Length: 295
Ligand code: NAP
Image 1 (cartoon, protein in one colour):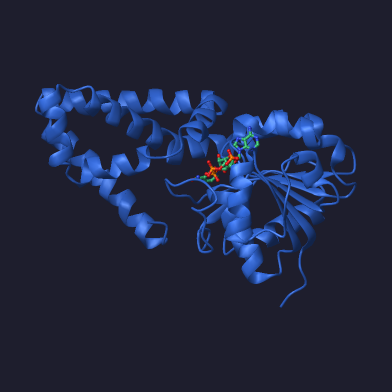
Image 2 (spheres, protein in one colour):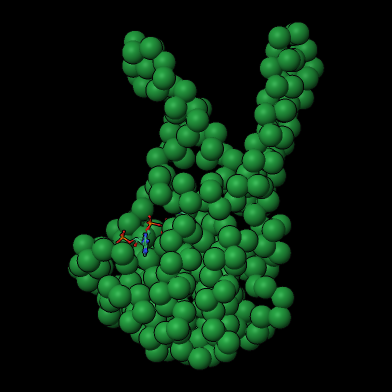
């Protein structure tokens, strides 16, 4: 077994992502010698003790990070500013502070000001997830073959960036660095807009008259069913993502609405070629995803 990358890893928030990292750390033994877990509620920490993947649980985030050489924020991004404020002064000199938040400019904006000199801040985002949440939902293969994007601000200590990259490689992920604004635009189209559409289509179906609503549920074909899976995600997490990637998401939404209008126009005027081309484009994208094993 390789040397553990860190002596003590403090996970702040322990839902799907945090508990997957904790399970991997416990199983492999080479991520960190000790795992400390913090959550907002004692109920979650009690469950973490039952699940057995933490060496210690701590309800006070300041106490959780004390003496940790790696601190990973795994709470919803809307909680990051308050968490950073609570832990900032308690971070150990030389420690690496990282996160798993789905938006990156907002995380740098909210956490950056509370990072003391001598602590290395390496924002990160594992692009892997399910619609489940909480400490029971994590599993050790979640990040296998998936990307983790790092968005270190210019001048970040390269050794710390490399340690976080190695942590994610040991979790099974492929790692790439990206500029935070670029990250937010890319994620707006590949993740945030599809979720917005899924929530909206469920809302539309739910607003139908009673008898049609029952039929929607009874005869849900795979198209609608796939949307309902995406729409089953955690409300707080998605509220925070939408509010913290506002500009990029609204830009992608307006592009999408133009394209949807284009398709509507083609349907209205019987433009068969336009419709066929648009469907063909969708098939091409699906084929290329399968080829690069990201389907
Ligand atoms: P989750 O399953 O909903 O768990 C959230 C955890 O954060 C819980 O342990 C919760 O504690 C804690 N928490 C919530 N509010 C808090 C607060 N105000 N202060 C301190 N702790 C708080 O979340 P998740 O799906 O793992 O997502 C965590 C982060 O990963 C988010 O930033 C999300 O954007 C990002 N992410 C998610 C996915 C995904 O698909 N789920 C993928 C990539 C990245 P309690 O249980 O005690 O409330």
